[in-house]
Image (tube, rainbow, N blue to C red; front, side, top):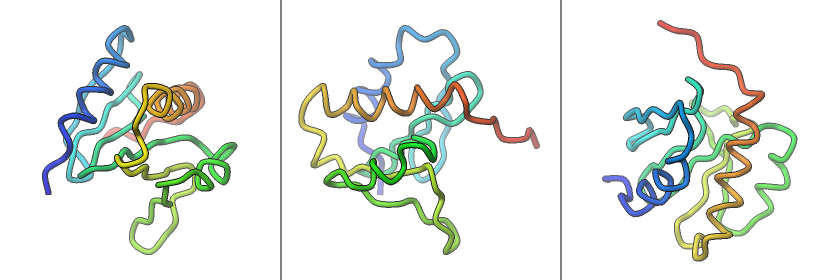
Length: 112
């Protein structure tokens, strides 16, 4: 399934003023790297947000969210957000701002 270009364009616009943004194809979509660290992705019709462990449980309580599960393991700090609940700019801003806030503390993956 191709990823939502509409979601990707909204993220591009939101991140346009940041200096170190890179797009990478991952997770059957596109991932936006901020300062060399995975921040927010679009996969299918969902955002994958790296919100970190501090607000992870709170994020999962929001409508249209689900945990990220990779190889049977729940990835704490990562949530998927369905496009259907992203109706206003403030809906997008919540997820983008929380992903950017955690990005300051996130560790970059090791270079291969």
